[in-house]
Image (cartoon, rainbow over all chains, first blue to last red; front, top):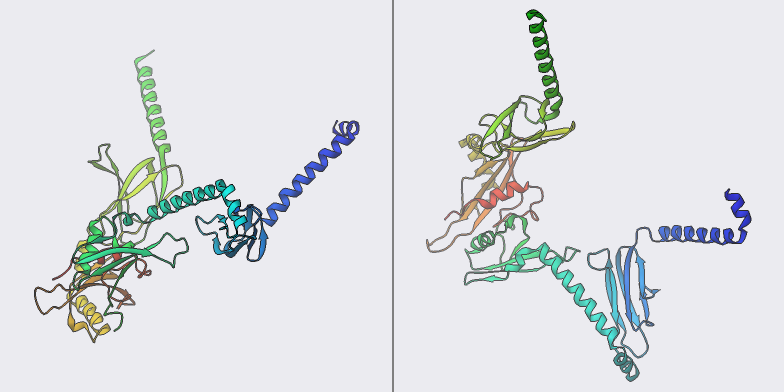
Length: 211
Length: 213
């Protein structure tokens, strides 16, 4: 029945077969080439600026990159060059969003005429900051009560740069001699178990570490 | 029907009913594989009443093996005073329920293990580890924990004036091959980040020891 149909509709069958083969080939190609890669959304203002990632030219849209660190550079005549780094695979780093700063008069006029593109970029940056802020607060609820200070000690926090996620903190304690234990007790009184925190005492040397 | 036949029929019906009831009850029981880590450990299985106030013992397990228990939620508690009486939740569903019971020792039993000989050995280990500065600190009596192979205590700074506030350091020791060994350096607070090889419940116990003044 199928062979009869094909015989009667040779051209249609040929076109359909080619389309199916092309689709299968496309999905196979993308599966192979994108295996192990993360999708990265690329926004570029102006859209025809030159953008390279580790020297490889990419355009606006979606790029597929292997997790790791990349040097990103963007440039266009009349605009200030941009250079930065991103880490693909790190949470909240699935976009490259660059708006070049106009330098020449022509570029400034262009930016004025396309202000909506710059405003859209600011809106995306604000949304990303909100998302990152929420993730940070969720991971570190104690920060809502810090810094805490009285005349005996201050409890604060700083980013833990050893954590690639960017969401870890070090709780810092500045205390008068004899009141460091009281500061730790304060953390417990706030409702947090100091055992699970990364705590650093400032202006302090553990006498037992240097024995 | 004669009276004898009637009695026989009634007796047969009762027997059949009892057999069916017994069979239904037996089928409702599910195999639960118990693994008791200590050979001396025995446990009892309790079903809690709906209001949570009463417990009914439904099974006793004296060694690793299989017990048959009806589907439901239970609490397993070690028997006797040697082990921590805290209950372990057991949920029996289907035919593949397994539970491993490895409780810590009770506070009472751990206290009994902290003999004067043991305290001397612990204090000697601490003193010999920090000979240059240990005289500046009071080694307080601490607590054994887990199964007596971990010990936590505090070292309180000796201050010249009662108005000065001393620093209190927490220290963890572990018994290996019958010898006590300090794990890490004494610190104002022991954290999972800095003491990765120490069970978190041991760190928590050390941090919860009161300050000594």
